[in-house]
Image (cartoon, rainbow, N blue to C red; front, top):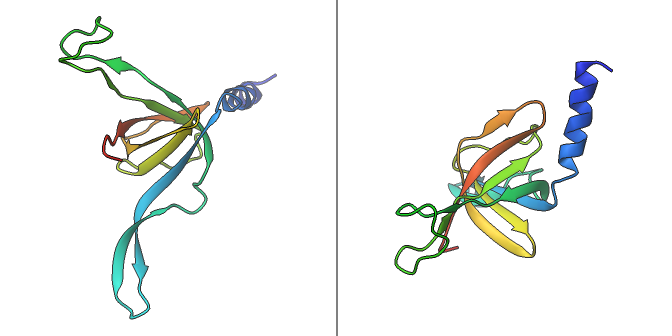
Amino acid sequence: MNLQSIILQSKKFVEMLYLDTMTVYRNQTIVKPNGSKTTKLMPVDGMIDIPCGISFNKLNYDNPLKETDTTNPIQTKPKVFCKPDVTIKAGDIVWVTAGGKVYKGKASDTCVYDSHHIEFTLGIDTEA
C-alpha cells in the first residue's frame, strides 16, 4: 500500500465523521430586469447542505478555567471542518446545521490540510 492510497483511505474515514451540514453564502452581483446591478447575499451554487463537522471551544477571557460566570459569560469560537475540495473564503457567511440547531456566522481564513480536510473558525452572529 503506497502513501497516496493511505491518504485517500484516511480521507474517506474522516469524511464519515461529518454528521452536520453547512450552506455557504456570498455577496453576488445580480442584474435586475431594468438592467441595473445590485449585490445580494445568496447561497453559492453547489455549496448547499455540504457535509461538515462543527466543534466548540469555550472561551472565558478573564478566567479560562472557570466554566460559568454571570458577569463574564462564556463565549464560543466554533471550528468547522469539511472536505478539502470545498472553497471557503474569509468573510463568507456560513450556516451550519448541527443537532437540529442552526449556527450562523462569518468564516475566518481557512487552514487547508490536503491530506484530509480544511478547517476555519466561525464568528457566530449573535443577532442572527
